[in-house]
Length: 198
Image 1 (cartoon, rainbow, N blue to C red):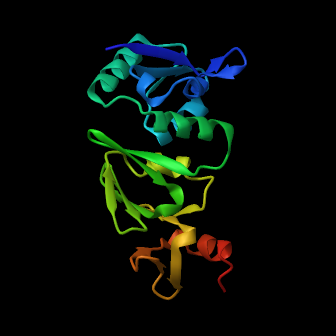
Image 2 (cartoon, rainbow, N blue to C red; image 1 turned 135 degrees about the vertical axis):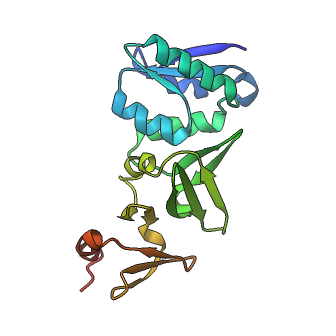
């Protein structure tokens, strides 16, 4: 198996621009990105389910990254395209959900809400499908913080564009799929202020 360690910054270009020079058939090797930009790496690479190593490179972290890549399917051209988009804009339109041996690309606007289930996160989509990812909810809180998503409860992150109704007396938010999300007491005023509810 061939590995390529690719730096995010390459003399005025981004290592992510590799997709401009390869077609799907030519992407027949594994990629581990290296970067000195911690905040960028955590957000962008997590969104795209691509592994990375922060510089200065730690030997144990490098070994861990290689072992993880060996266990996963190869990075796809679609993942690299999303990573490129995330790196050049503040607007997040897609996210890669990594589930066991397969990865699913989901439009952010198609997500109704996320629900915590111990160390897993459940994604509920507009088409009625539920995806379960083996990452805790807190990992997605920062990633989606610049979008239309809001965390009304420790166990939920909702797409505010998918809110159908708000039952003030019960402290419940009804989503487009008729699921009712509990609103924490300490979030009630903040939520009502955001949505200008009197």
